[in-house]
Length: 450
Ligand code: PHE
Image (cartoon, rainbow, N blue to C red; front, side, top):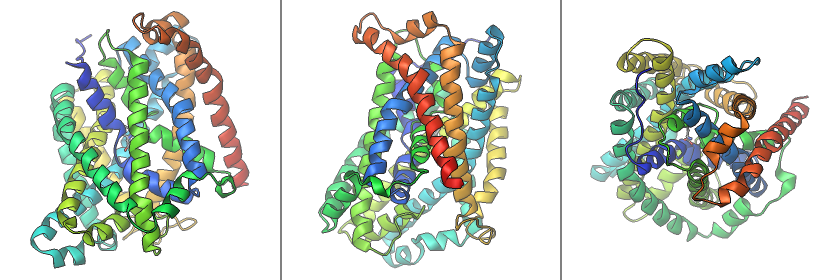
């Protein structure tokens, strides 16, 4: 077996894991899913599930990678070889899901790219920004969306070809502190709007009557998506981990940072949206409808907007790299093709698949079910149905595939005495909470369908 790369520093791992977790899921997807599911009660569910379901699974995926030193396909195959039951389907589903998700993730990343360039143009020529910097202008132009998605995919391919260490660490590191500061400044500004009390109430007051039967499954799906669980990304990252790294601590930090970022995105967006009052809270374009308008009214907003969308673009890039990395590392592990060829092939497949979501609001705009576009249907099916199923599979693979000693070896760190007490809680979460809650959420979803 070729020698496997490993993170040069512990910080390198954090950059990649946080870079993969924090992305469009937090800023684009979280706000409108909260809007769709009625606000505070859903936010509460989301935070609870992040800790009770997302975190144990994230730790499980990292342990799966670290203990097998392989990516998800090979890891699940090696578990299968030791047991009578097969775990390979979990790996296959995860890789396939990653591939399809990159295709529409690239489309949304293309939107971010569009707004970055529009704000750049706006610094020189503000009237042009007013004209072209609108979401509907972009949505009606499917070919522009395809072009932008292609540019994005090419960036991702180039970074992934450079390999895990050089590729990932540098990019994301530089951007994170800048993005955090920008976000905090914008949140302060947005909370100074008159609608902020209403927004805080909407986000944090749990009115359970607003939940729908499908809300728990939506919350689980979103938690998996935003923490990059169920794609195999964290298995790959775990396989590059070195021996001294304590996985539960790493998992906990990634979960906390990611969840805080989503809550900040909510704090930023809801005052703006509620103030404007003519943007539907359930619109998948919520971020792109609301934020540019707000920025344009703000002194120095164009410059701010440019910086913000560039940072958001880099976040989307970091996440896309994580997604493509799964497909590539699995292809390389499974076949004899080179990393470069594997990267171009998977990038090209993602591009072809991306044609459908890219054209969903133009050429395919008449293809709607229940008022949902092709992109929304794809996103809804993969995130709300497929991901929770993979999550179930992962909890099974970690619990049944690895033996108790292996799990303990990677979970417990003798220097961290609390890890001994936490082990049974993690085991309990994987054995009962994760499968129980997901099964119940599916049951509620079925009731809503019926
Ligand atoms: N977690 C990322 C986000 O929230 C999406 C992602 C999923 C990235 C899986 C990599 C792997 O945007």
